[in-house]
Length: 110
Length: 115
Image 1 (spheres, each protein chain N blue to C red):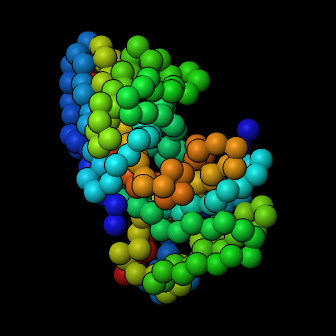
Image 2 (tube, one colour; image 1 turned 120 degrees about the vertical axis):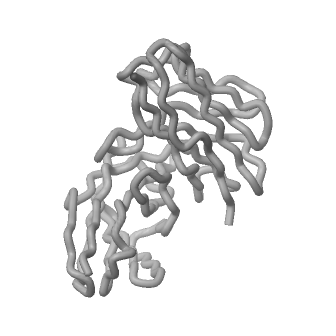
């Protein structure tokens, strides 16, 4: 059974204080790993897809990296508007279903 | 980018009533849509896969008679929570994508509260 574990559960940062979120996974054949951002009371918003170990993708202050066992989402010099829950999901190669982690809730204080 | 519209965003109903939630793909055709349920601080749990023109595929433990799914067209899927009870209160989210599994777009979610 696929498993996705995100840590920490919550992260409080001062504006400008860079940090990283972790997503550890076990899956029988990885087709892709996804990062989403979710604001309270809203659906997830797509951020990145990573397909193979060593791959990196960037978008503004966010950078996602992937190894064979985990993925990191680095937030560089965060701003209050980066406050959200960040979700990680894996897509196994055997079917179309995504397995999600419980998320990391990031709060950035001005 | 692709957009998925979901409504209502919030619904409050009495126990025993039925509630319908709509999910529309606005700028692409979706032969497959997905319905998720999310509890506070928990993962999104896949409930069912909605297939246009055929029966939905339900995940283990999800009551198909309780959660009726209809995918009547390539742009519309509906989830009806029948005879709702307080334990059905949750955040329901649909998703769809132009490329199955590669990049899913999510609706804005529906917060269901059953009194």
